[in-house]
Length: 251
Image 1: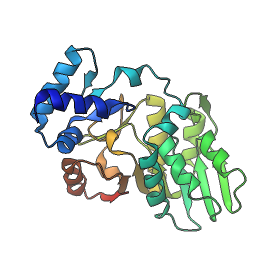
Image 2: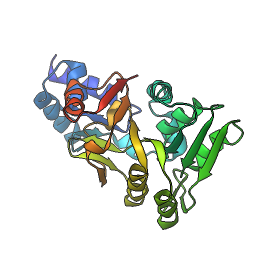
Image 3: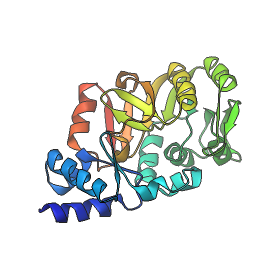
């Protein structure tokens, strides 16, 4: 495939996506990562995208409001599959901590009506469960972060220090060999407490989060037990997770 044709394919992949990673694009287009990096350089010089560590972001996506409604519509089919697969890992009677985010919300929708105790800092997830028989919900309290509807800060973290959970189901802003990361230091502060309070950590994230380094480092990969993602995950990331002993589920 010639460079011009690859670059057209890359632009098609960028439509409606916030981020693409170079490794996944190379796999999809049967090209080397070095060729894809050169293509991204050319596209950046043409003003069609901005390169970041591990891949690129589209200017169109950067201009869109990143609120809960936008996140819900992004990669919806993949998130629904991930939600079903992650919900199947939950046993009746367990105590779950559920992080905020649209992918975790897809898991919540598939737990409706089951006998569970749910601890969450997410107002949207609490709303999903508000009339679900059998599900007992505890909100952490704290300062409301309006764009994502999550409760953060010292009050939220104090509650999380006082609980003990069977499972944590969480999203993430990025997954690299260095570990997990997210978009805000406040978000990361709460998520660290969630990890400490849980006996098993399940991360739900579509393939675009792999190879991406978000603003605030969260934890090493060794803190994670299971990652549920979609079938578009590049082979090099599968090898990375296997090396760290993380169970991988492709939905």
